Amino acid sequence: MSEFDFDLAVAGAGGGLIAALRAAELGHNVVVIDADEQFLRGNNTSMCTAMIPAAGTRWQEEAAVEDTPGRFLEDIERKTEGSADQRLADALTRASAPMVTWMADTLELPLELVTDFRYPGHSADRCHTITGRHGSTLLAHLVERVRRHDRIELITPMTLQEVEVTGGAVSGLVASTPDGARDRLAVPAVLLATNGYGGAPELVKQWIPEMAGVHYHGGFYSRGDALRIGTALGAGTAYLDAYQGHAALSASSQTLVGWATVLHGGLIVNADGRRFADETTGYSEFAALLAAQPDQTGWIIIDERIEQQCLAFTDFRQVAESGALLRADDLAALAERIRVPVDTLIDEVEAAGRAARGEEEDRQGRSDERRPLNGPFAAVRIVPALFHTQGGLVVDEHARVLTQKDQTPIPGLYASGGAASGISGHGAAGYLAGNGLLTAFGLAWLTAEHLGPRA
Image (cartoon, rainbow, N blue to C red):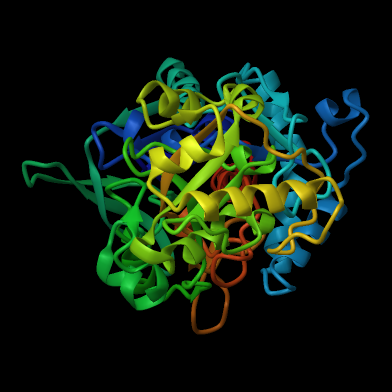
């Protein structure tokens, strides 16, 4: 009989489920714990838009999209201005296609390639998603697979408190339940998939002060547990100032409006009715720009055509159903509804329309191909949000956590998603859409691959 209770423990029932499912397929006995009893709707995976970037897939081939891991890596280097961890980014871009293929073929996840729009920074259509484009559906599918697997045990609510190391290698963990009871499990490998520190205001203020006080739209239990546990074991940290912000959260419904509204041609104005930045710079870095505006608020202005195109997103449909979209037949009436100066809004939208037709330069330097907005119009009030942090424990190309002292692996300790250092460089501008899920799923996948088949 084995001296261990399980071969692998996964702390976090979000992207970490990929490690559990792949490791179980390879013959390992796995336990998954999560602090949130309502994790199916309370963690970051459940809140995302289910966009998984992958390069060189069969879906791309079927759509005649030319892409390679190398091209994907170049996009990451360009978006982060060369500041991303290249070794980690290379490993993840190479793993992306085999991983999504496995998810489709083994987990029977009905993936499709997004071709109706492209997020800033991606030079090819490479985001793979599911119908409805919502993380709750994606997570529910993974959980259903986990619960059906006889080699995986899922326990919640249970919070990881510490990881035990004996002779330099992981030997067990201690976890607690809400009633204060503590349990010890003997395990030789632990994956920290507990996300980042977005739910810890004091850490946000320390590492990303520009987002201090901004609404956090992420998992309640993302409190930096991996940082606490990993650094206590001598692990190194990196990119703690990196994060994914978002500038398109509905102020009234607290639901993600979605950046597709902008990429299809929508405009953003502040409370004075003025555009203030190029909307195509990216939703992550735009969050800080919006936070700097009067009352930290703005309006996305779209037309009926864009509204119809965005109904493919569950989030957007929920925003519309909540009554957050204010509609009007013309710009003057819309300005009255959203209480901004009429002349200012008309001037901004008409100028943007002339720029879209190529009649003049765009005032904010926007250069994408788009149609001018035409009535009837709609507007939704937005506020900036912090979605998740992108820095954490330093990991290698196998997702192994490395020591601060000499950058060597701590045997048996792995990290993924927001618990790991990520590939977004520094700040918000390096975040490439979907790379949150890529690090969450991809590093979990690489953890299981490193474990290999059970002896």
